[in-house]
Image 1 (cartoon, rainbow, N blue to C red):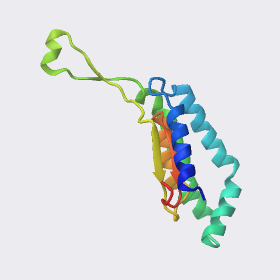
Image 2 (tube, one colour; image 1 turned 60 degrees about the horizontal axis):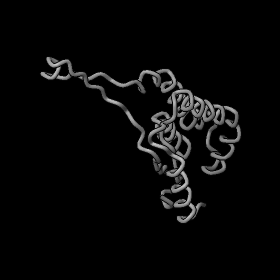
Image 3 (cartoon, rainbow, N blue to C red; image 1 turned 180 degrees about the horizontal axis):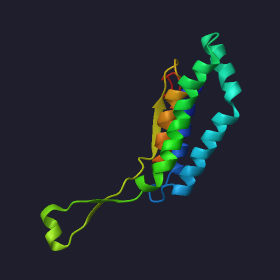
Image 4 (cartoon, rainbow, N blue to C red; image 1 turned 180 degrees about the vertical axis):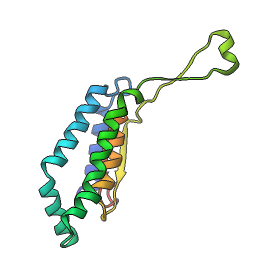
Length: 149
């Protein structure tokens, strides 16, 4: 278990590494998403074994459907739509349009995002928000018991 001091050190390191003026590119975000997807797919049997040990004889099909397909489906959905999501969105200018004014909304990452997940769904409820935060260009810190953040 990570101590609170270690969490502060990790957080401060991530803050210094994060440069708001240089958010992750589309390619970098997809690369990280692909790495997470490969990590899940390459370790399915280990994840099933670990969850069975944690929960006591839990059906492997239940683990796959409840804990592993959620993050994989989220990754697939995000990769399909991410290129469009990171583009500036044109907004209506109202009466200002008469002056030739154009408005755009630029979606920018927050920086470092903390995620706390409960013990009863440690993979799905940790990875889904982490994948979404990474897709938005953020860095992620997680705690599976909520005591460390």
